[in-house]
Length: 255
Image (tube, rainbow, N blue to C red; front, side, top):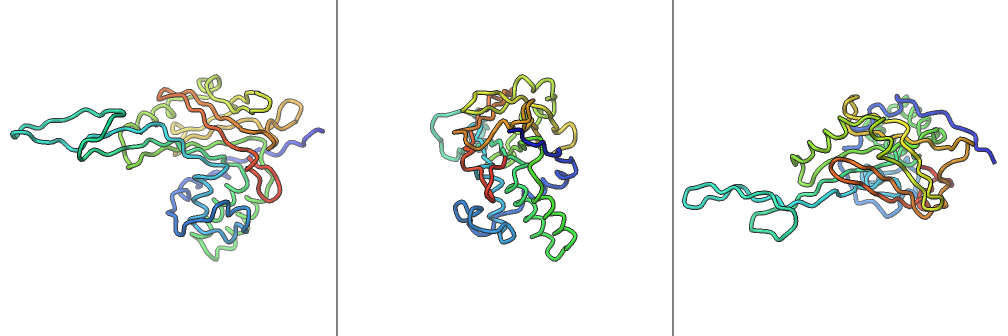
């Protein structure tokens, strides 16, 4: 059966999204709350959970680094120890994690969480309410959109500059052979079709993949065991799997 192509997601739909992803959580959200409740009732904490750790979002930890404590002094002479990877801790050392946050930005529940966060920040704005309803209610676009952002715990680690530099220098031509989505059922590699990064002023990276093959059939149906996102970067090769059988919302598969 031929699947009707959807209209592409307009760039304007993504404008202003990133600041709303930074809202702090309030109450601890219930597990899979999106299956039980209307998004109009989601709390800020529930929205944050959905866009950070859910079937449509995953924080991929790149590495764990042992960061030495501040310089110690022995006999009045400063001793600066080198950063070590692995091994045990010395007194005062701390562990730092570099995280690549991934989310399927065009998936309906992610759109719902983003829209709900905007409404929580602007209660009573009827024009915004209509915009959010239209934004959430439209069909999935012709592209699958994966957003990547990066941070460290604790924040501000210098290695983030290396990640930023990679995505700033990257181009679509460079990434085409280094980034794809694939299905565990068919093994088909869905190549990257579009890229927007820091060089274009985006506070992260947007990877877009075609949703349909040349016959108009969707690459992913929700029946797959896993969907794999693979990215070869200067700082390492990323392979993150998602569970499409959990990526159902409001009665349908959405990604």
